[in-house]
Image (cartoon, rainbow, N blue to C red; front, side):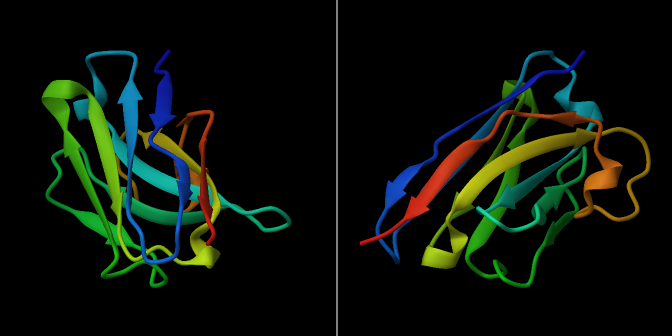
Length: 125
């Protein structure tokens, strides 16, 4: 069973940057569409960004467009989320998730089978 491990979270000041990583336990990550979701306290989990298996197609939530970039290195079985110009409203637990097959709604949770445990991002001065 595919296992995903997120890392790279932490405390950053507003306007700062972080890079999150999502590492897979198997050498099969290239088969999956990977997305990042986030959940702030008291809020529903929301899709942030997705990347298809080849890396040629990406999606972003409107709230992060122009600030976040998703990428993948299939040779390292890792997907990244580079976050710039972080805002207090970006603070949340960030989760990566993997889906196989055709993904229609890439930023919706129901598409995804495998989930990581999350990494915390705190944006505060």
